[in-house]
Image (cartoon, rainbow, N blue to C red; front, side, top):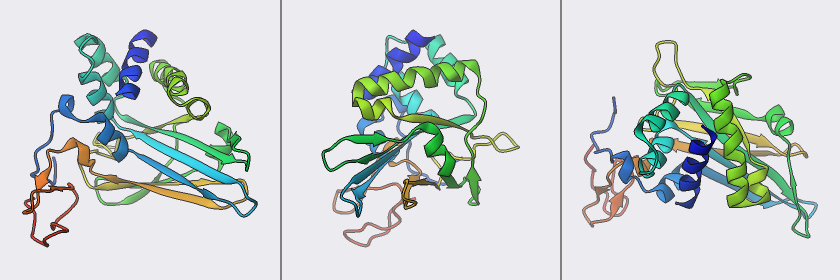
Length: 238
C-alpha cells in the first residue's frame, strides 16, 4: 500500500452540476493548473523585521483521481482501492512559518497550527458552516497521510517536511458531499501567527481546471465562474 501511494504522490508532485460547461476527463486535467486552483500562499513582512509564510493545499477526490489517471503503471484495482480509501473525506495540507531577517524558517508545529485554525466553508447547499479536523482516521488513511509528508519533503525541503495534513469529514447526513469540486462553494482558511495577527485565505469552487474552457467572443478562455466576458461584457453560455 505504501509503495502504491509513494508512486502516486511522486507523479503528483512532478507533474449534478449547476453548470452546462463540459467537464474534462480527469485524465486530461492539467495538474499544474489544478494545483494552482487548490492552493493559496499567504506571505508578508512583520513589524519586527521578520516575514511569514502560510501555504494551504486542498486535496479533493478529483485531484487524487486526476493524478492516478495519469499513472498508467498503477493497476486499476489499486486505483479503485485508493479512491475507496479516500471516499467521504477531504484533506487540507498546511504549512506555516515565520522567517527571520537572515532567512531562517521557524515552522509551526501541528498543535500550534491547529489550536487557532479556523475552517469555514460555503457548502454545496449554499450554507456556511465550520469544519473541524477529524480526531481519528482509518489505518489506510493514516498510510496516505504518513507517506504524503516525506514526499512533500523531497519536493519542498524543510517547508514540505513541516507541512501538516488535516483530514475532514466531507459527507452530509444524506451521503452527499459537503464540498464538491464541480459545484459553487468556498473554503475560507484562517491561520494565526504567534503575535495574534490573522492570515486569511480562500479557495473558490468550482475548480476551473476541471472544465473545458468556454470562449469569450475575443477567443480568450473564460473562467468557469464568470457570467460575463470581462473583455467584451458579452454574456457567456452557462
